[in-house]
Each structure stands twice: as C-alpha cells, then as structure tokens.
Image (cartoon, rainbow, N blue to C red; front, side, top):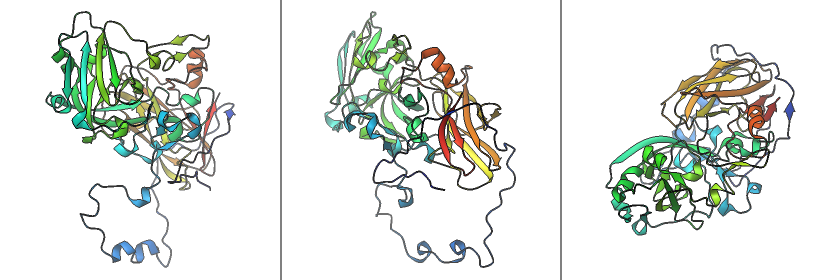
Length: 431
C-alpha cells in the first residue's frame, strides 16, 4: 500500500477528489479489542532482536553534543507544512500542525502552527515596550522586566485559527488531518493577567473596548471587549516553560482563551483603551462570517465545540493489518471543558462513547481514544464532541443549512474519514 508522501525537504500535498458518498456504508466490527498477538519471529528468530545493532556496539554522543535538544533523526518528517496555493506570499500565510503525528494534549513548541500577516518579527526583548494608552488615568509604558514583576499564572489553552477547516465548507477538499484541521495547537502559557496591567494604568468609567496592536510589519490589531479582557486574558511571555518562539510572538503576546486566534495579538506592543470597537480590516473585510444572502456576522469570537480523529486519517492510514486498532483524536471547546466524545465507525449510524484520557482543562484540547477490532471492512470514521454546557458538535450539513457555503470561518462540523479495505484513508463527506 502506498502511503502519502511526507518529504522533509518540502511540502507535499495529495489532493482528494471531491467525493460525495450517498448514505453511510456498512462498518467493520467495533467490538471490544481482543488479545494483541505479536508477529511470529520464525524458527530463526527476528534479526532485529537477536542480532547486535550499531547502537549496541558503539558509544553515542556525550552530554555536550546537543546543548539544545532536538527530535530523533527518524522523526525528521514530523514538521509543520504549508499549502503554497492557499495564499499569495509566505509572509502572509499559514502552516499546519502535524496533528496525526502527535499524542497527548500538549503541542511541542516547534510544531505549533504559524499564521502571519507580515512575516515573523525578530525583536530584541531589551528594546521591546508595551504601551497602555487611551481611556486610562495614567498612560504607561512597560519594559519586559516591568511586566514580569506582576503576579504570574500558568494556564493550558488551545489556540485555533478562525479559518481552520475553512476549505471544507463546500465539500471534502484537502486530504490529510494536518491540512484540514491543523491550524490549532495547545500549550501551557505563562504570563500575567491583562486585568492587572490595565488596573495599573487605571480604567476610566467610559472604557469598554481594547485595541491591542502587534509590533510586526502588519501592525495587526483587533477590537477586544473589556469584559473579556478582565475575565481570563493573559499577557504571556512563555509557552511550555520556555520563552515564546519568534513565530509565536516573542517576546510578548496576548492570550484570549477560547476565542479565535487572530485576536491573540503577537509581538504585543500597544493596547489602546476606548469606548467602542475600531472596525479595523481584520474585523470587517476579514474574520467575519459571510452568510448565504451576502450579509456578514461580525464579532463571532468564540471557537465552538469541535473534534477530529487524528489516527487513522489520510496521512496516517491503517497499515498494521486486521486486528486490534487504536483510534485517537482531539476535542476542544471555546466555551469550557469537553465532557464527552462519541465515535462512529459507520458514518454516524451508530455511536459509541470514546475514552477521554489525560488532563481536562477549560478551553483546552482533550485527548480521546477508542479501541476496537478491525475486521478489514471499510469504515467511515466520525467523532462528535459535547462540552460541559451541552453544546454538541454539528454536522457540516447542519452548519450549511444555517449559514450557507460562503463562509471560510468557524467550521466546526463533523469530519468523516473513509478507511478502505486496504487500510488507506481519504477525506470524504456523507449526505
């Protein structure tokens, strides 16, 4: 069976034909997994275990050889990838997290997807400043050392681009979990409360909105309601214990838990306080949900309940043959915690409750598993997430019925992967 190519030397993308499947197909067995039988070693034994390997024979590198650790050379294919034709120029483009190659809930710093509007700003932290101005009693300018003197907090949050899965509105397009759903990552942020910084400047009674601004060449801005800013927003300088990466906003970024990623201003340099939204480019001509009648829904900040099966998927086919199989995926909600994930192997005809495992945090991704015996028949895999407030992940048809097919934002519809009898996987839809 040919596997999708993943060359470390550059992006490789296999596009699926647009395929509409009428009705759900019969599924393979979803019985509880039985005993896992390892492959027989044979009369002569398996050379991989009976013979001395090079790594048994020779000394390896010492502790001074790799001052900053890196993945094994055998994991060199696990990288962020882009789709060149999606945007006109790399400095205003996106690459995607390899969700199908990860497990647990924390995204490694070097694999968090990137979205830039003016390329990566390379900033000297000693020269970086954060200004608070507008409707405040005391306009202030903070150096990095000043910000780090406020009380610090650690929180695990997902960050999802509003356009994640956007190419799928009109049907199955990109073939691969990384490309269809990879504009999301989940890390632990360390920072200070935005409210503490604002209180230091003193908010005037008429203050209602904020305009955070980035220091990059695009001067990215978004209007943020003051109520959200004082609720759970952070000004972060670390992710997963180390300083922010340059592509993630080093040395300072805004964290807006549960809300669309373009509001999480990177390279944060200024926050203006006002009494109304600014209606800048990224909240008027962009990042609004275009409806069927041509009107647009604005200020649709929250990323709704969503899930995706990461394995098996088009970039991670079933290549082990029949027998015990582990299905796994991610679920998240901008409203709070995930309370349940259901899994279907027959295109939504029947559902079973998946097993949630690992830490459960509000506005963070959750890892789910479903262990079953695959009998070699074709499967139509789906997952459906439900959060603690009862929000249920919808079908794509339900979303289109409500909003039409014009939008490219906030697509949290149920994803279907078709698994063939040979174990290959493809992005499809079921009507």
